[in-house]
Amino acid sequence: MATTAHGATAPEANTLETCLIKSGATAGAKRPKQTFAQALEQAAAIVAAGTLVVMAAMPGNRDEVGKSSAAANGLTATAAPGRETTFGAYVGAPYHYPSDFRLQTDPANDVTLKKVEWYTNPFNNPLYYGARIQRWSANGTTGAMIDFLHSKAFAPKDQNVKMEGMLDGKPVPESGKIGDVFQKLEFSHGHNMLTLNGLLRFARFSNVIVPYAGVGAGVSLPHSEMQRTTDKGRTYEYQYTGPTAQALFGLEFRLRSGSIFLEYKFTIADYRAPHTYRDGSLFPIDMWSQFSRWWSGNEPPGGWGSTRLTSHQVIGGFLVRFAPETAAAP
Image (cartoon, rainbow, N blue to C red):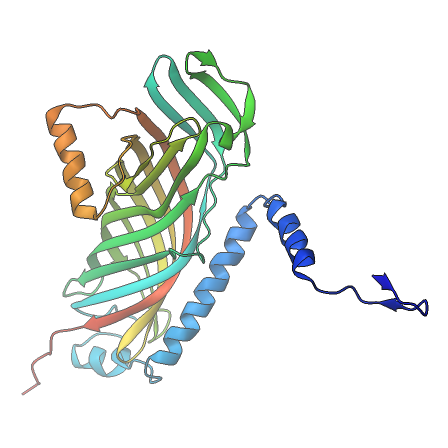
Protein backbone atom coordinates (compact mmCIF):
# COMPACT_ATOMS: atom_id res chain seq x y z
CA MET A 1 0.00 0.00 0.00
CA ALA A 2 1.22 3.57 -0.77
CA THR A 3 0.61 6.81 1.26
CA THR A 4 -0.67 9.94 -0.50
CA ALA A 5 0.30 13.53 0.22
CA HIS A 6 -2.78 13.90 2.45
CA GLY A 7 -1.83 10.87 4.54
CA ALA A 8 -4.46 8.61 3.01
CA THR A 9 -3.58 5.09 2.06
CA ALA A 10 -3.94 4.28 -1.62
CA PRO A 11 -4.13 0.81 -3.14
CA GLU A 12 -0.92 -0.55 -4.60
CA ALA A 13 -0.67 -0.20 -8.36
CA ASN A 14 -0.96 -3.49 -10.24
CA THR A 15 2.27 -2.95 -12.13
CA LEU A 16 4.05 -5.45 -14.36
CA GLU A 17 6.85 -5.65 -11.81
CA THR A 18 4.40 -6.50 -9.03
CA CYS A 19 2.73 -9.18 -11.14
CA LEU A 20 6.08 -10.74 -12.01
CA ILE A 21 7.12 -10.83 -8.37
CA LYS A 22 3.84 -12.48 -7.36
CA SER A 23 3.92 -14.98 -10.18
CA GLY A 24 7.52 -15.87 -9.39
CA ALA A 25 6.62 -16.53 -5.78
CA THR A 26 3.74 -18.71 -6.88
CA ALA A 27 5.87 -20.63 -9.34
CA GLY A 28 8.42 -21.34 -6.64
CA ALA A 29 5.80 -22.74 -4.29
CA LYS A 30 6.09 -26.45 -3.61
CA ARG A 31 3.36 -28.61 -5.07
CA PRO A 32 1.23 -30.36 -2.46
CA LYS A 33 1.40 -34.12 -2.16
CA GLN A 34 -1.33 -35.90 -4.09
CA THR A 35 -3.40 -38.19 -1.86
CA PHE A 36 -5.82 -40.96 -2.69
CA ALA A 37 -8.69 -38.78 -1.47
CA GLN A 38 -7.68 -36.01 -3.87
CA ALA A 39 -7.44 -38.49 -6.73
CA LEU A 40 -10.90 -39.79 -5.83
CA GLU A 41 -12.30 -36.25 -5.84
CA GLN A 42 -10.77 -35.65 -9.28
CA ALA A 43 -12.27 -38.89 -10.54
CA ALA A 44 -15.72 -38.03 -9.21
CA ALA A 45 -15.60 -34.57 -10.77
CA ILE A 46 -14.51 -35.71 -14.21
CA VAL A 47 -16.94 -38.64 -14.28
CA ALA A 48 -19.84 -36.43 -13.21
CA ALA A 49 -18.98 -33.81 -15.82
CA GLY A 50 -18.57 -36.40 -18.55
CA THR A 51 -21.83 -38.11 -17.64
CA LEU A 52 -23.77 -34.84 -17.76
CA VAL A 53 -22.34 -34.01 -21.18
CA VAL A 54 -23.16 -37.44 -22.54
CA MET A 55 -26.69 -37.40 -21.11
CA ALA A 56 -27.30 -34.00 -22.66
CA ALA A 57 -26.04 -35.19 -26.05
CA MET A 58 -27.98 -38.46 -26.21
CA PRO A 59 -31.73 -38.94 -26.73
CA GLY A 60 -33.67 -38.65 -23.52
CA ASN A 61 -35.94 -41.66 -24.00
CA ARG A 62 -35.03 -44.57 -21.78
CA ASP A 63 -34.39 -47.93 -23.41
CA GLU A 64 -37.44 -50.16 -23.32
CA VAL A 65 -35.43 -53.25 -24.13
CA GLY A 66 -36.45 -54.83 -20.87
CA LYS A 67 -40.10 -54.61 -21.90
CA SER A 68 -40.54 -54.76 -25.66
CA SER A 69 -37.38 -56.53 -26.78
CA ALA A 70 -37.27 -58.86 -23.81
CA ALA A 71 -40.90 -59.77 -24.26
CA ALA A 72 -40.35 -60.52 -27.95
CA ASN A 73 -37.52 -62.89 -27.08
CA GLY A 74 -39.24 -64.50 -24.11
CA LEU A 75 -36.91 -62.90 -21.58
CA THR A 76 -37.85 -61.58 -18.16
CA ALA A 77 -37.38 -57.95 -17.21
CA THR A 78 -34.26 -58.83 -15.17
CA ALA A 79 -32.58 -60.82 -17.95
CA ALA A 80 -29.49 -59.44 -19.70
CA PRO A 81 -29.77 -57.95 -23.20
CA GLY A 82 -29.08 -60.21 -26.17
CA ARG A 83 -26.32 -60.33 -28.77
CA GLU A 84 -24.90 -56.89 -29.55
CA THR A 85 -21.71 -55.05 -30.42
CA THR A 86 -20.78 -51.80 -28.70
CA PHE A 87 -18.21 -49.07 -29.35
CA GLY A 88 -17.36 -46.72 -26.50
CA ALA A 89 -15.15 -43.96 -25.18
CA TYR A 90 -14.53 -42.70 -21.66
CA VAL A 91 -12.72 -40.27 -19.37
CA GLY A 92 -11.71 -40.62 -15.75
CA ALA A 93 -8.94 -40.30 -13.20
CA PRO A 94 -6.40 -42.72 -11.69
CA TYR A 95 -4.51 -43.12 -8.45
CA HIS A 96 -1.11 -44.85 -8.66
CA TYR A 97 0.40 -46.44 -5.58
CA PRO A 98 3.97 -45.33 -4.80
CA SER A 99 6.53 -47.70 -6.32
CA ASP A 100 10.29 -48.14 -6.58
CA PHE A 101 11.97 -47.08 -9.81
CA ARG A 102 15.30 -48.68 -10.77
CA LEU A 103 17.66 -47.54 -13.51
CA GLN A 104 20.24 -50.22 -14.26
CA THR A 105 22.97 -49.63 -16.83
CA ASP A 106 26.04 -51.39 -15.43
CA PRO A 107 27.49 -52.10 -11.96
CA ALA A 108 28.74 -48.50 -11.77
CA ASN A 109 25.27 -47.12 -12.63
CA ASP A 110 22.55 -49.00 -10.80
CA VAL A 111 20.29 -46.74 -8.73
CA THR A 112 16.87 -47.26 -7.13
CA LEU A 113 14.51 -44.47 -6.12
CA LYS A 114 12.30 -45.78 -3.31
CA LYS A 115 8.54 -45.24 -3.14
CA VAL A 116 8.15 -42.71 -5.94
CA GLU A 117 4.77 -40.97 -5.65
CA TRP A 118 3.43 -40.75 -9.19
CA TYR A 119 1.32 -37.72 -10.12
CA THR A 120 -1.47 -38.17 -12.68
CA ASN A 121 -2.87 -34.75 -13.77
CA PRO A 122 -5.84 -36.27 -15.68
CA PHE A 123 -7.27 -32.86 -16.61
CA ASN A 124 -4.08 -31.52 -18.21
CA ASN A 125 -3.17 -32.08 -21.84
CA PRO A 126 -2.78 -34.85 -22.88
CA LEU A 127 -6.03 -35.83 -21.19
CA TYR A 128 -6.82 -39.14 -19.53
CA TYR A 129 -9.06 -41.12 -21.92
CA GLY A 130 -9.93 -44.58 -23.17
CA ALA A 131 -11.76 -46.46 -25.91
CA ARG A 132 -13.24 -49.96 -26.19
CA ILE A 133 -15.05 -52.46 -28.38
CA GLN A 134 -17.36 -55.05 -26.83
CA ARG A 135 -19.05 -58.12 -28.30
CA TRP A 136 -21.78 -59.88 -26.32
CA SER A 137 -22.98 -63.45 -26.86
CA ALA A 138 -26.52 -64.47 -27.82
CA ASN A 139 -27.59 -64.93 -24.20
CA GLY A 140 -26.32 -61.43 -23.40
CA THR A 141 -24.58 -62.45 -20.18
CA THR A 142 -21.04 -63.15 -21.40
CA GLY A 143 -18.87 -61.11 -23.70
CA ALA A 144 -15.39 -60.04 -24.75
CA MET A 145 -13.82 -56.59 -24.88
CA ILE A 146 -10.75 -54.93 -26.34
CA ASP A 147 -9.94 -51.99 -24.07
CA PHE A 148 -7.37 -49.22 -24.60
CA LEU A 149 -6.53 -46.96 -21.65
CA HIS A 150 -4.42 -43.79 -21.90
CA SER A 151 -3.45 -42.94 -18.34
CA LYS A 152 -0.45 -40.88 -17.15
CA ALA A 153 2.31 -41.03 -14.53
CA PHE A 154 4.71 -38.21 -13.56
CA ALA A 155 7.60 -38.29 -11.07
CA PRO A 156 7.97 -34.69 -9.80
CA LYS A 157 11.61 -33.56 -9.72
CA ASP A 158 11.20 -31.78 -6.37
CA GLN A 159 9.96 -34.92 -4.60
CA ASN A 160 12.21 -36.23 -1.81
CA VAL A 161 12.84 -39.98 -1.91
CA LYS A 162 15.15 -42.53 -0.36
CA MET A 163 17.87 -43.86 -2.67
CA GLU A 164 20.20 -46.79 -2.89
CA GLY A 165 22.84 -48.00 -5.34
CA MET A 166 25.59 -46.44 -7.44
CA LEU A 167 25.82 -43.58 -9.91
CA ASP A 168 28.97 -43.01 -11.97
CA GLY A 169 30.79 -45.45 -9.72
CA LYS A 170 29.92 -43.60 -6.50
CA PRO A 171 27.34 -44.53 -3.83
CA VAL A 172 24.25 -42.36 -3.93
CA PRO A 173 23.13 -40.48 -0.79
CA GLU A 174 20.53 -42.15 1.40
CA SER A 175 17.94 -39.57 0.34
CA GLY A 176 17.54 -36.73 -2.11
CA LYS A 177 15.31 -35.22 -4.75
CA ILE A 178 14.29 -37.06 -7.89
CA GLY A 179 15.72 -34.10 -9.79
CA ASP A 180 19.17 -34.98 -8.43
CA VAL A 181 19.10 -38.06 -10.66
CA PHE A 182 16.52 -37.37 -13.37
CA GLN A 183 15.83 -34.27 -15.41
CA LYS A 184 12.65 -36.01 -16.54
CA LEU A 185 10.95 -39.25 -15.48
CA GLU A 186 7.40 -39.69 -16.71
CA PHE A 187 4.97 -41.57 -18.91
CA SER A 188 2.84 -38.53 -19.75
CA HIS A 189 1.91 -39.17 -23.37
CA GLY A 190 0.53 -42.38 -22.17
CA HIS A 191 0.79 -44.91 -19.41
CA ASN A 192 -0.96 -46.85 -22.17
CA MET A 193 -2.52 -50.27 -21.63
CA LEU A 194 -4.13 -52.48 -24.28
CA THR A 195 -6.05 -55.46 -22.89
CA LEU A 196 -8.31 -58.31 -23.99
CA ASN A 197 -11.04 -58.88 -21.40
CA GLY A 198 -13.77 -61.34 -20.55
CA LEU A 199 -17.06 -59.79 -19.38
CA LEU A 200 -20.01 -61.03 -17.35
CA ARG A 201 -23.36 -59.28 -16.93
CA PHE A 202 -25.44 -59.80 -13.80
CA ALA A 203 -29.21 -59.60 -13.27
CA ARG A 204 -30.59 -56.12 -13.89
CA PHE A 205 -31.44 -53.76 -11.07
CA SER A 206 -34.19 -52.40 -13.35
CA ASN A 207 -35.02 -52.15 -17.05
CA VAL A 208 -32.28 -49.52 -17.31
CA ILE A 209 -29.39 -50.44 -14.95
CA VAL A 210 -27.22 -53.46 -15.79
CA PRO A 211 -24.23 -54.36 -13.55
CA TYR A 212 -21.22 -56.12 -15.06
CA ALA A 213 -17.70 -57.26 -14.20
CA GLY A 214 -14.64 -58.39 -16.09
CA VAL A 215 -10.97 -59.39 -16.01
CA GLY A 216 -8.34 -59.04 -18.68
CA ALA A 217 -4.68 -59.05 -19.59
CA GLY A 218 -2.57 -57.39 -22.24
CA VAL A 219 0.47 -55.22 -22.88
CA SER A 220 1.89 -51.92 -21.62
CA LEU A 221 2.71 -49.51 -24.45
CA PRO A 222 3.76 -46.27 -22.73
CA HIS A 223 5.39 -43.19 -24.16
CA SER A 224 8.54 -43.30 -22.02
CA GLU A 225 10.27 -40.03 -21.19
CA MET A 226 13.55 -40.44 -19.31
CA GLN A 227 16.56 -38.17 -19.00
CA ARG A 228 19.29 -38.23 -16.38
CA THR A 229 20.31 -34.88 -14.93
CA THR A 230 23.88 -35.31 -16.18
CA ASP A 231 22.90 -36.40 -19.71
CA LYS A 232 22.23 -34.29 -22.78
CA GLY A 233 20.38 -37.08 -24.57
CA ARG A 234 16.95 -38.38 -23.60
CA THR A 235 14.55 -41.24 -24.26
CA TYR A 236 11.31 -39.93 -25.75
CA GLU A 237 9.38 -42.64 -27.59
CA TYR A 238 6.60 -45.22 -27.53
CA GLN A 239 7.72 -48.59 -26.18
CA TYR A 240 6.57 -52.04 -25.26
CA THR A 241 7.55 -52.42 -21.59
CA GLY A 242 5.82 -55.58 -20.34
CA PRO A 243 2.51 -57.23 -19.43
CA THR A 244 -0.50 -55.62 -17.78
CA ALA A 245 -3.69 -56.91 -16.18
CA GLN A 246 -6.94 -55.44 -14.92
CA ALA A 247 -10.14 -56.28 -13.06
CA LEU A 248 -13.25 -54.13 -13.35
CA PHE A 249 -16.79 -53.65 -12.13
CA GLY A 250 -19.34 -51.23 -13.54
CA LEU A 251 -22.92 -50.14 -14.06
CA GLU A 252 -24.42 -49.66 -17.52
CA PHE A 253 -27.36 -47.25 -17.86
CA ARG A 254 -29.16 -48.26 -21.05
CA LEU A 255 -30.81 -45.53 -23.13
CA ARG A 256 -32.63 -45.88 -26.44
CA SER A 257 -29.68 -45.37 -28.80
CA GLY A 258 -26.75 -46.08 -26.49
CA SER A 259 -25.58 -46.47 -22.93
CA ILE A 260 -23.79 -44.50 -20.25
CA PHE A 261 -21.49 -46.43 -17.94
CA LEU A 262 -19.63 -45.82 -14.68
CA GLU A 263 -16.77 -48.17 -13.86
CA TYR A 264 -14.02 -48.96 -11.40
CA LYS A 265 -10.78 -50.61 -12.60
CA PHE A 266 -7.88 -52.11 -10.70
CA THR A 267 -4.81 -52.26 -12.94
CA ILE A 268 -1.25 -53.60 -12.65
CA ALA A 269 1.44 -52.84 -15.21
CA ASP A 270 5.03 -54.08 -15.10
CA TYR A 271 7.51 -51.72 -16.72
CA ARG A 272 10.94 -52.57 -18.09
CA ALA A 273 11.61 -49.57 -20.28
CA PRO A 274 14.76 -49.37 -22.45
CA HIS A 275 16.70 -46.13 -21.98
CA THR A 276 17.60 -45.67 -25.65
CA TYR A 277 18.55 -41.97 -25.90
CA ARG A 278 16.20 -41.87 -28.88
CA ASP A 279 13.67 -39.22 -29.84
CA GLY A 280 10.82 -41.20 -31.35
CA SER A 281 8.06 -40.26 -33.73
CA LEU A 282 4.94 -42.22 -34.62
CA PHE A 283 3.86 -45.31 -32.71
CA PRO A 284 4.43 -47.84 -35.57
CA ILE A 285 7.91 -46.45 -36.26
CA ASP A 286 8.87 -46.58 -32.58
CA MET A 287 7.62 -50.16 -32.28
CA TRP A 288 9.60 -51.19 -35.37
CA SER A 289 12.73 -49.55 -33.96
CA GLN A 290 12.35 -51.46 -30.70
CA PHE A 291 11.70 -54.75 -32.49
CA SER A 292 14.74 -54.23 -34.72
CA ARG A 293 16.96 -53.53 -31.73
CA TRP A 294 15.66 -56.64 -29.94
CA TRP A 295 16.07 -58.79 -33.06
CA SER A 296 19.69 -57.69 -33.47
CA GLY A 297 20.43 -58.39 -29.80
CA ASN A 298 21.53 -54.83 -28.99
CA GLU A 299 21.15 -53.62 -25.42
CA PRO A 300 19.88 -50.04 -24.90
CA PRO A 301 22.85 -47.70 -24.30
CA GLY A 302 21.27 -46.15 -21.20
CA GLY A 303 20.23 -49.42 -19.61
CA TRP A 304 16.76 -50.31 -18.34
CA GLY A 305 14.27 -48.42 -16.20
CA SER A 306 11.88 -50.66 -14.29
CA THR A 307 8.91 -50.24 -11.96
CA ARG A 308 5.41 -51.57 -11.34
CA LEU A 309 2.41 -49.25 -11.55
CA THR A 310 -0.49 -50.51 -9.43
CA SER A 311 -3.52 -48.27 -9.81
CA HIS A 312 -7.14 -47.55 -9.03
CA GLN A 313 -9.02 -46.09 -12.00
CA VAL A 314 -12.51 -44.53 -11.90
CA ILE A 315 -14.02 -43.88 -15.32
CA GLY A 316 -17.27 -42.84 -16.99
CA GLY A 317 -18.27 -42.82 -20.62
CA PHE A 318 -20.77 -43.78 -23.29
CA LEU A 319 -21.40 -46.75 -25.58
CA VAL A 320 -23.03 -46.88 -29.00
CA ARG A 321 -24.85 -50.20 -29.41
CA PHE A 322 -25.42 -52.26 -32.56
CA ALA A 323 -27.71 -55.28 -32.32
CA PRO A 324 -28.83 -57.60 -35.15
CA GLU A 325 -32.47 -57.23 -36.14
CA THR A 326 -34.63 -60.13 -35.02
CA ALA A 327 -37.02 -61.73 -37.43
CA ALA A 328 -40.61 -60.68 -37.01
CA ALA A 329 -42.86 -63.23 -35.34
CA PRO A 330 -45.21 -65.03 -37.78
